[in-house]
Length: 401
Image (tube, rainbow, N blue to C red; front, side):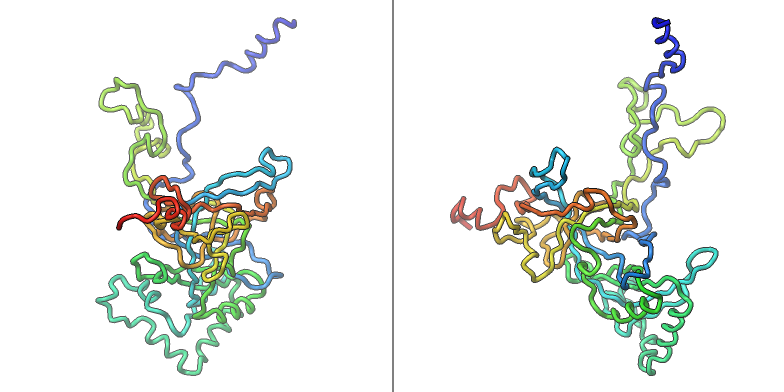
């Protein structure tokens, strides 16, 4: 009986076929259709759950991707093989100039979801905000909001009645805010606008909180903190039309294949006499809307403060956060910024929508306190040897112009 049990075991578990006949499919079908995104900016489709016990606060922000560098830090994770050891990690720099709040929107809950009740705008809107409402600014008559301003000149009675309606009927309050894109060296004058949900407090508290922010600047440190886990929403880097091998990761055909080998050998059976939606096909690759969750904030730099530079307790050299020669295809970081662990979708200069985490963070990596030892600021254009221009001058001495 002992000698026969392996045979019975083989009968219970028949031999698996070869991988060339059956294997896990290539590419996820959950991201279909792989089309070019209609927006050039990430949209927040879900906001964190509201908690009325907390004070009113904003749940999102917009920054601009500057580039990547790497940092050194000591890992504080008892039980791990890396505990109290030095590790090198890649980080992404996101420049976040203050945003200006210009309006408030109220939503009513219906059986078909949320419905907009009303929108109340601020009295003064900047030109970079008004440009968002025009396709061709220099040809336009620039009449936007000229009639709306009269509501403020007549004693604000109409504005106050609209705000009272929001307090009475609405269940969700969101602010309209735009970026100050002129503060960046992007060559763009049209601001990016976004709706940011206000969480915490009662509806009346939310409306009062939003109206007090009208025409005021909201800084990134009022929304996010260091060591916090956040989500990034962005448009991936566009790669145009690609074939099935690049787009879906299917296997190439043998070398002697007639009429090309970077193809799917059979796209379907005779019947059903149509193409199945799940078959890999060539088409658009990249420029898709993607949300990535649980990105840790390693550092938050404030403009004009000492912490804006790249110095640490271990590296006391006085150096800027921008690497030598600037970030490739971006330039110099002058405004507030976030240092986020890992990569972020999209190209340089692209707006990145940042959102507070939807989940209660309990993992060890989320709760770990980050202490940076070193931030690399060597040139990203080549094999950078020096961290600062003074260091380069000491090595090379004076050179001819």
